[in-house]
Length: 84
Image (cartoon, rainbow, N blue to C red):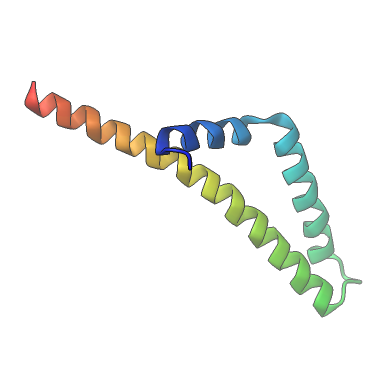
């Protein structure tokens, strides 16, 4: 298992990867178009909404991995400053 710093580094790399972002945005755009389509059935709209939410949740988890490490570093530096 990765430690918090390694996980944060990998999450940051993923979030900055152009191919990943292009894929994520392309899938979101497709499902947004289904969601907004006047011809979409209720089931299609629901499925599109669920998929958009799932993709957003994955992206948010990656952001959390990165921000958790940033907060931990900040706390560690602050703690060091109090004891210097």
